[in-house]
Image (cartoon, rainbow, N blue to C red; front, side):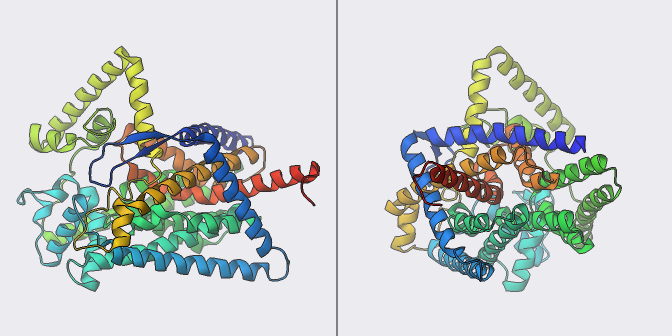
Length: 513
């Protein structure tokens, strides 16, 4: 048990440091991106007292409304379920409306994956080879899982029907909200926190605006949150079916989006440390099953496409190239995409993996030498890399989806470029600070509380994501999944904060008991 306690304290301390930094940055400054495809951030200062007042008013409003819902003990669960249903209907309605209003079309990597999926439907597998000019899947075979998903959507709804994918994203957003609600119920028995979560989830507009993005963000996040829900059910209540569901959901998340491997690693760490602390074999077997299902799924995916295409799938650009690029300054923020992958793998090394890897190792060495020679520059580099990803309240939800296929209406146009855009980005900025404060309070108030290590699965994933993207290629949209994962923890933290403030006011005679 001492090991479990030490693990809990270690994760809590790391979480406090991370969310202390996130809260501090969000209260004083904000990173913004233009609504074009340019990945050049600019920073604007925030008025600290105003941000705190707005966050305090938001918590006060949630406390008041939740108090009305919980006023009579009889029927509390029914009223919470009604609120849950209302939020889910609202999420579906808003996101479906946005798909039709925004009229977004796939561009860049989205378009490449869709083109590959369309080709697969007609027997054209040139994207897997060097025969096509783009060679997208030859260079990026890790996108094969996403391509398979899009091909399945096209097989059901018609080739090239990217709007069907967007509408399925709407369903995915609602599933994300529902999974987060179930996670919150497993983290705490405090019904006020459950209600807070539903209010916070209903205001998570970066998630909602991303439903038009024909890529792996929403599907992978949907599978990730479902996996966390099932993982907590399994750890707290038992049941082999919860474990099997978790394994399947986690494997699907990893196949659709490679970064989801961070969640798989978090699960394995929790299980292995628990096994050592409790001296039990069952958590070890569960971790083996999680890894086996993922590896088996990846093997089956590659085997099926190799048999269908008759092409041996290439290993693609070495992953170390992304680390090398993450240590370079490009046209945008430090560590962001600067064309290095194609320049190295396609250009300089002519698809020679060994030569490409050697070049990346050399470039990493050059970057390290530069950081050592100029520590001030290294500090600025990584602070800017950190804030450009984590301190953008929109997570590029407008910048990544602004390309439209036909004329938009005035409301959608205003959301991208007009007064509604200004209002929405301002709202997201205050909302982001509220979420960071909530998670920090959850960690602070719960530091000495006894809890299972599985309660930290979301936090361990977020810490892993922070470390990963400080090393890897940077991008604001990569942080969106971690932000959505914060909502259950933020809800619990804000609920306890409001309860403590209320108790203090009663003690001082300012409020009635």
